[in-house]
Amino acid sequence: MRTAIVGAVLLLLGAVAVLTGLLPGADAVALWDRVWPILLFVIAVTVVTELAAEAGVFTVVAQQTARWGRGRAWLLWLLVALVATLSTIFLSLDTTAVLLTPVVIVVARHSGLDPLPFALTTVWIANTGSLLLPVSNLTNLLAQHAMGDPTPFAFAALMWAPALVAIVIPLVVVFVISRTRLLVRYETGPEDGIEDPVLFWIAAAVVVALMPLLVSGIPVWIPASGAAVVLVVVFAVRRRSVLRFGLLPWQLVLLASGLFLFIEALHANGLGTVLARVSGSGSHHSRCCGCR
Image 1 (cartoon, rainbow, N blue to C red):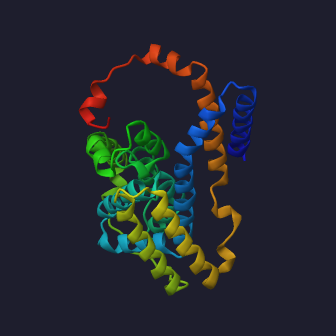
Image 2: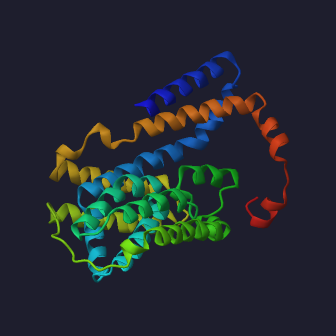
Image 3: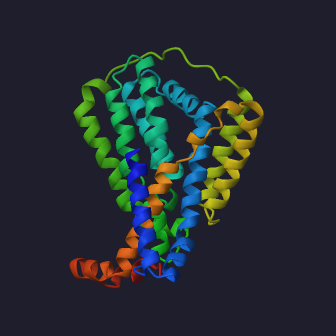
């Protein structure tokens, strides 16, 4: 709720800036043209991942990961790190932090393992592993536009080194801290069954199909919106009770919208000049990365 309140206040301040002329109307329209695809993508991918979680996709992935661990906690931990990394890169950090983390904790407990290193790894990767692709993070999508809209592969070519460091270092730290809890064996606990196999397989197919489309060069809001529509229709037929307003990340969208408008108003009144004086400027980076 605090997020919604902050977002509403920022949105109100931005609206006042437009009405008073502090933010020219043309600048506000240009801002909307830039950010509406990003906001639509955030809404669509959130709906996709929430409905996929309701269908049991993340639970089944985690249970299969436990089987692949072959009773070795360290191997299970590495597999969890891999799943968390892929989830963060392709489905955004919010999916990993909010949807995958609880499932990982349940799987660790069912296997008789301390869930702390698994939960810490998942949450940490959600925060540090979102550098590789534009879709990994809302900030990346904004940076992509500022860089001249490079393709996902060009973006990845620029970011792979820091992305790798940001993933490996937390894993090393977690392993060093939790090595006594990871160098043990485990037995897989009872597995949760799939409530509706039809929903599960459709949701799994949608998620698998969505991942390559997000790096295909197509504007990401298009495949994400298509995937969301497919799952909403399927759930409307098979499990209508799941479809609720709470599926939409309205608080995040409200906060982002307000922040975009408020910051744009500040930029229109000299914030960019102040930041340039503090941080300096140069063109070497943009020439090297080939984004301009």
